[in-house]
Image (cartoon, rainbow, N blue to C red):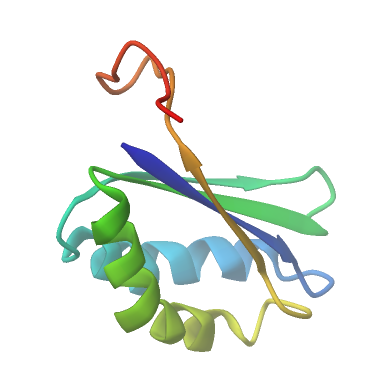
Amino acid sequence: MVARSISFSLKPGRAAEFTKILDKDIIPVLRKQKGFQDTMALVAPGGADAVGISVWDLRENAETYARNAYAGVLKALEQVVDGTPRVQTYDVCNSTFHKTGAGVTA
């Protein structure tokens, strides 16, 4: 299982709109992707920064999403995001929400 973390700087006063776009446009796209498991969005107090975390069954499925659908996600967010989002992919080594393996393999 892997997680993609996407860090955003939000334009001033756009946190509520960011949340609406996630609900209306982005989460439905994620749910259609092969291997998608879960997502979580976090907005910092004051609304200047946000983080999106998506959980995938396999790295390959997360990479397919990144190649095929992620550009549409960026397009949907361009009115509320300031600058280029920063993306990192992690192996999930522990979760209280999802069953995981005993540890990360190198």
